[in-house]
Length: 157
Ligand SMILES: Nc1ncnc2c1ncn2[C@@H]1O[C@H](COP(=O)(O)OP(=O)(O)O)[C@@H](O)[C@H]1O
Ligand SMILES: [Mg+2]
Image (cartoon, rainbow, N blue to C red; front, top):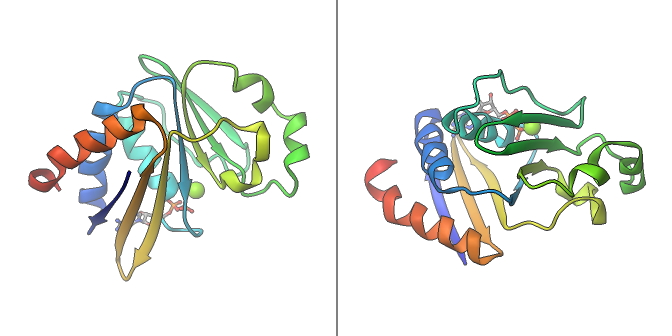
């Protein structure tokens, strides 16, 4: 299942993130694709805020992984600086993926088999000052989430 959404400004990113947060359940893995500056980290920040995370959510570009918790554990991973997937052997990631939790992964293409398979893929495209978001559900759980998003999105964004 694939659906497209238009996020015209940060306020609609916020509303979208809130609906997303209301429908996500652990365990879950979401890849975020899109160029540098597309808004991947920003979307994760809003989702985590809606999930009740009160910590400041920073970009994991330098730390590779940031952990948070709400009703479940959240792992925000950014593999932009990883040149070869083998480098991940020296991080906490191979061990962490055995945990139940929600994973948000930026630059997942650099992760190879060291990262969990995606339930959902969010691709963010910049269209002028707007963002277009293409969402692909790859599991039943993700299809439920996407169906619920669609039900609510028209009157909310
Ligand atoms: N829908 C949007 N409309 C306008 N600006 C946005 C939107 N989404 C994100 N931005 C802005 O674009 C920038 C994206 O940065 P960031 O989230 O760090 O990108 P990425 O993680 O994809 O590299 C931020 O300054 C953010 O405020
Ligand atoms: Mg980022």
